[in-house]
Length: 249
Ligand code: NAD
Image 1 (cartoon, rainbow, N blue to C red):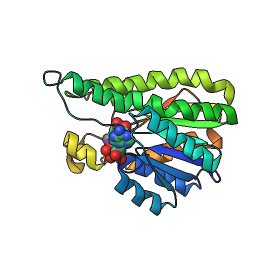
Image 2 (tube, helix red, strand yellow):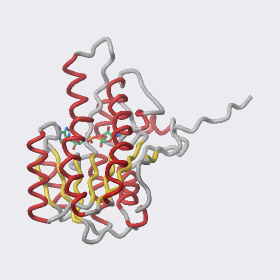
Image 3 (cartoon, rainbow, N blue to C red):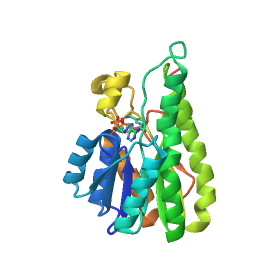
């Protein structure tokens, strides 16, 4: 396991699903974790489990994001790790999509990432140290599904954002990378896309959906000392789902 002792970590969307898996793995590696989420009830429960802190955060609210970051800095004096993981993925076809649908998904998945990352990056620049890990998806640049157009666009946007921000902050000891999960077993994946464990597993060479902790382990790696020379990169964690198999002809 990577050693994140004494590191202060902030995880957005940390109350459920993949975010909760990230929180648990960072805490297991020794980090003190701030769980930042709109879901107060679940977030407080996770915070209690890992002896972390819950901060109510709606990533679409710029002032809220700045306030949460300032609160954390006031108490802990630094933020070493940001895992910006918040995202929604409603299944909505182009034919049914309204401008409101487009704006809502975009503002949570992409603009919200900017609102959170900006004050954290500026604090990291002052400390001359930081690790930022953004949650994209294989849907960002490799796969897709009918009903995932705006979702895919935001996840591609995250990869572009990540590469450019990595360049901007590289001179200040801050690395910026992304994770691209395949199908990870969360309640939301089941609810929104109807992916059931047994059926979904058939599409994965490893014959199982991923666990939230599978993503957490990669986030811990990007957050570690060992990854200090890696920036502007993304890693697919999907049990082999995107690998094209040579046809048996
Ligand atoms: P989830 O619904 O379990 O978790 C999302 C979290 O974000 C929740 O805790 C929710 O309360 C929070 N959230 C929603 N809106 C918010 C807002 N405005 N402000 C703050 N918090 C808010 O979903 P998940 O399946 O764990 O997905 C998490 C991330 O991983 C998303 O970015 C998703 O796109 C990405 N992802 C998931 C999968 C998968 O298979 N589950 C695959 C690829 C990428």
